[in-house]
Figure 1 (tube, protein in one colour):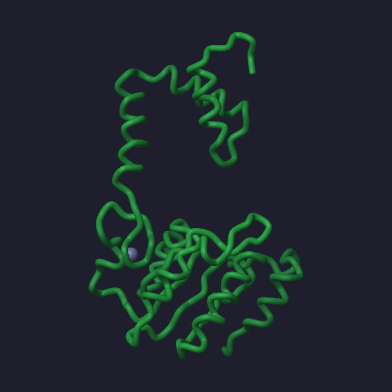
Figure 2: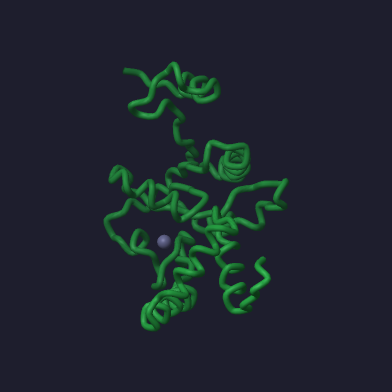
Length: 199
Ligand code: ZN
């Protein structure tokens, strides 16, 4: 902190510093940027933060973010409600959407089981997932990240769902498109081999 302490500026820097991937230097730069905004722009900015917080909440069905009762996917009559793709974050659902291949619905857990970070099953939207499962649901696709936490979460949920007679699948792992086998790490390569498909 500088010895020129301007309290409101320090406060602004502190807020930016809390953001992911933002260090002190960047926080400082952003704070000065905000300070140099016109009054209207600054007000628009703070209004956008306030409005996002006030209006955005979880979809009643899939826990994705929405400003209505249901998110656009759950509202869409044409989406296949018999398939649920379970992801960790809303951004993961967006990534799946960008493929234009997936026609089912989602369920957003808002995290993954991580004992190290004190995140247990009850901290995730797992109960909400279970309560969605009715006879219409044929398949649950576990699309949590291929990390220790993501795998543990997928395992945990699979154990809950299997006795209910629901088909549970996991996204295949593989070599990135355009990638080179030579540069793939061992784990990726091993998993790609494991998940190979018939041609
Ligand atoms: Zn939804």
